[in-house]
Length: 476
Image (cartoon, rainbow, N blue to C red):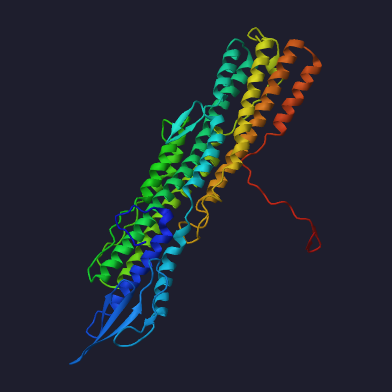
């Protein structure tokens, strides 16, 4: 089937377009090489007729087989011309095909946006338990979790009681709500990064198709002895920026502080612009192949800019979380209830039944936190972004930065689940000690306090390799 410039080709048609491109390039080569006073080329359906003028006689014609529509074959000298068989051009045609393969081969197997979309679906499973309410982000709907409802109900129950022990639990509930919101916001950054890569590769695939079609047009123009240039406007970086901000917009996040840290980290991406494609008109095979190469270089520059921006967003958010003055937004600092908080006092008013209800709400919140924590490791960029290492910032794009932030959030959620469990036990034992006025209950309460203070957990610690056993100078 012949190339149809009016047809709307898409990425699945790339192998077909590459075939057309090779044929057009060889056509352009034959015209360029035989456009002087010593030879002239005419393109026929299945052959090239190369004419060599002979003074006072006319010309000597040589027929050379033309490649098929798939760009393959051709170059053999045919014996039907008036000048006999002539020289074989198969090696020259092979070199042209090799030159085009060198340019376009890495772009024939770009990441499939559908695979990235599958990771976004997994991400939705992870972020939904942390969400305050259901939201539609782009064309995706994230569910609303029950954490904030449970915390609100726990707060109302605590409001019917009083005393230092109650004040401490109320302070924990407030911290827990804030930290859950902060971790939700950072999880939204993961969604933004996935969405950015998905939209970026959708646009990149479109740009590849456009570049191949423009290449065919330019080579065909050269074959007609006309001048033509690449007419392409890239929108790869701009699509990436839009996709990132959809997931980090003010109406999406719970905690406004994300806007400060995320916007700073997005500056690299926001300030980037798509590379320009050279549209200078060309009139020879050599200049056309050079412009084709430049067009794909421009596409790669835009992909690289976009991915560096996404990577910067991920790294910037991780770095911001780790700053000592920011850790309180993502990690609850426990202030356990000890014996001093349960001493009899006029303001002490504890309802055993309501207190048990608060502990049950803590258990429900912990279940939601664990659900999010267990879902996060299933979300990854490594497989869905795999491509040639020459494209963008490498074979896996920003997958390593994505993984680092993902692991940090997972550790913080695991630590938060432990904190919630410890707070529930601590409060339960404190109430038990108040109600029973039993020395044994006080002793169990103090054991819990000692455990909490002695095992604070450190989700900020970097993972260290397992120590190696050494005997002499040999690792055993």
